[in-house]
Image (cartoon, rainbow, N blue to C red):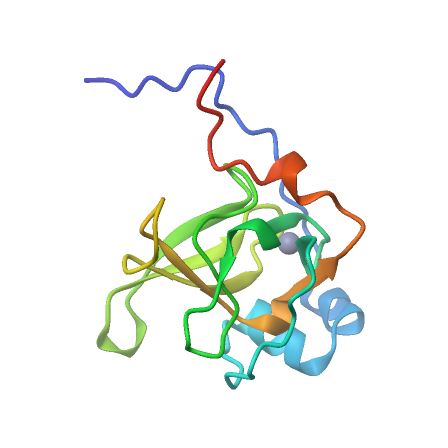
Length: 152
Ligand SMILES: [Zn+2]
């Protein structure tokens, strides 16, 4: 069986920015988490505003408030990315655990991990470091947040 990838090509060009440039663009904590794959302390997340959460490094829309839910972990949690191709998933075998790392597709920023114990409809729990996200309240969430268009 060959994969039927018809028209699903994403033209999200990666951007190449040197470590020094990232360092000057980001706060030390943002740099540590997104570029060094660190994990921030779980900070009770009080962000309840609607909007689009953008990658703090490159501004790409990665998660929408539409798919945000309270996981009780203290980290912002989503059951789906903002759109197909917004984030990429990678095997992470650090800490002797097998986890799936989530990165910004556009700039490869480390955002967090995805676990298979989320709510419906996807059953996925994207556990994201809050410092990697920037809430854009002006973005209309419904425009890009549809998980997968059912009809076409
Ligand atoms: Zn990015």
